[in-house]
Length: 252
Image 1 (cartoon, rainbow, N blue to C red):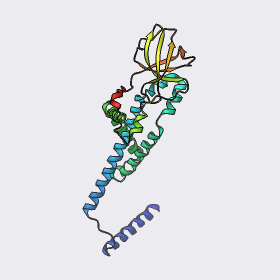
Image 2 (cartoon, rainbow, N blue to C red):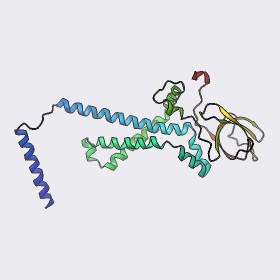
Image 3 (cartoon, rainbow, N blue to C red):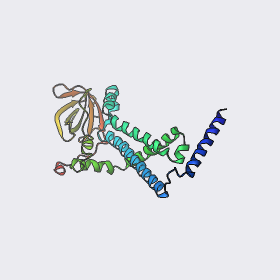
Image 4 (cartoon, rainbow, N blue to C red):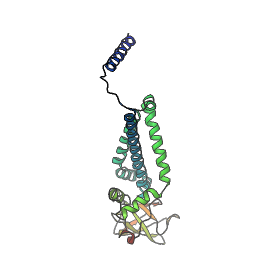
């Protein structure tokens, strides 16, 4: 019964359209109109895809540039700090762009015929895969970070300036650089709020000795309590992914 009703409605719509064509009531649009429409749509799709790609690669870069992935090794306190620092707003914006991209692709025949779930999974696979490949090309975001340091990136300067900044000192986790090793004592300079230089000297006493991978010049995360400028037997994690700071004369 439903099929017959739908068929009758479809026939009525077709007859209505044919009647309007006879009376010249339907606007006639040229091929140029449709070509221009699809060109604009393709440009919009490309812009959304590139923006989504940029955001995802920036999220990956920012996590490694600040050494935040190393926080997870400190257990619950490190995981809490990692979740606090994670750029959730950028991720939410990227997810919105992915859904928008999927919605626009549905206007094409292949997108309309593809189930929404499969279409979104395909988009996510392409974006994530491309992002991982771009992340291997280190100079891309590093060069933008350098330009931000030189005050040559006005629109994105603040976003990139926050990349190298250390996490706030909460949960007893600090980021700094080893300046000297003497026996079982490490001399550390805690990173300042901007990530350039240091503000607080610190002595660390390791009763079990210095690990083999800990050397002078290493950037590290340390987890423990500071008492009178000293810390005894903290947890230490060497950070190997921090971008090399630019010299101060480069920043003038």
